[in-house]
Image 1: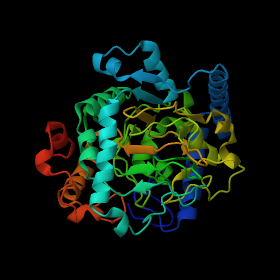
Image 2: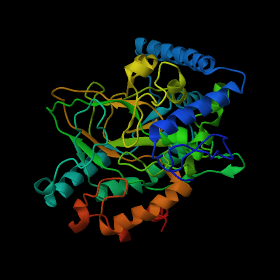
Image 3: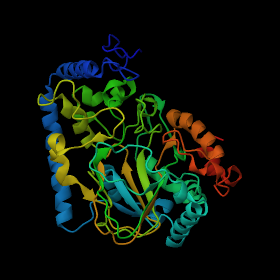
Length: 433
């Protein structure tokens, strides 16, 4: 379909006007798709206001439960020991809580000694290759519209530490466990392989003691306007756009793994079931750590809120291409009280949250101790991830930055980056080799 200002093309699947690439006249396209979604909801016999009221009633109950959990001094985040993942002995109660909250901490995912070795090896890697002498400063504005100070993100991807963690059997076990929370088969299709990951490469963070950080405001990362305007995502949210909130399942992978995305520096080319990171240092939960709105179905509110009459016809509550999806007090104040910190973590613990989940990083002044993590998500093998894996494999072989990230390419000449002959079977499968 062409990217004309208005669309005469309606999806055979969703029945909605759709643009598989960014429309030239974006405001007109927003007006058109909002009107079409309202009409689709009206055809169900309900109004947008009635559907949103149902969503809000559900969210108020979830927010109240989260607040009560905190007031009892209990962890909002489910906490699971790696030994239970490995043995298949995670309780049904805990599994249900992961589904409800959409996040988890895996304790002792790796031994403390292993995590601290990786942390030290990263220091040796960047120092030995004179990274700081050559560092040119932040090369993207990923969080440009959020209240933020730049976190201490290193554009380093191919260290032995990162690659060893990505292809480690314990990482594969946790990724499979998390992928199994999803429905990967449906609509007559198998949408992804829960037991094979695509080794999505991301950066590292090393935040030193004593720093002040403004954190990152609440946002989510699944996409931008493409979530309303491309055929695949219209099918992903088909139940919401038909006015059936009860049928909407944020764990249903149908159509997500093939949906088109609008290009930009904020785009993740892979489908991630969970975003995640592995702790390389101790982090107390009051030291500028990750927070989420632990309600996966809150995505329904983010998708339907722009349809209400208090939002301008050509606006989607501030969502725009090439920026993260913001969650603001102005439009989403209902979610504010649910924002919940991770528990304090130790080196070797890992932290995971549903790919749609609203999250933020809290500000901190005079941080106590290091705040070091490796970003490693769960990105199961599917058509979208197989396509991206080919690009990842080329970047890995040459030492370049992966194509989802700015072309900084610091590691091209670093002699001690991880080599193809060091890949194990998990690593080779994850790169499509």
